[in-house]
Image 1: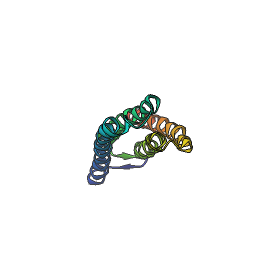
Image 2 (image 1 turned 60 degrees about the vertical axis):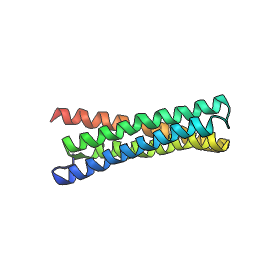
Image 3 (image 1 turned 90 degrees about the vertical axis):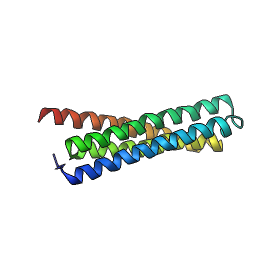
Image 4 (image 1 turned 180 degrees about the horizontal axis):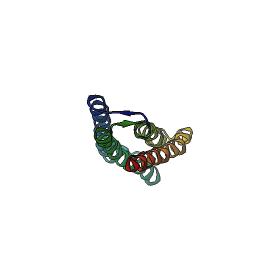
Length: 137
């Protein structure tokens, strides 16, 4: 398994930590916007969908922070790096699709949620496999 250690792993891990922190900051902004601006303009069901997107954004922002720390600890393993990339993409697709569905009312945005959800599952499985392999060495 390809591995990158030292300064390169530290930089890459730091980038995932920074990305996770950005995702978390945006989640706080979207949460505040949802309750102060969106709640009065959408149905209770749509607000529930918005809240699901926000909750998943928080979970996966924390996941990105965690992946960054693991990269700094274990070096850049391909599966660990893939987990971070998939988690970033999945968060964008899943949460973005649900946010846009809620805000626009256009149901075509709903297509992105299951694609993003599958991508998120793949990210967690990549993380699990990466750590399984790391524990075997």
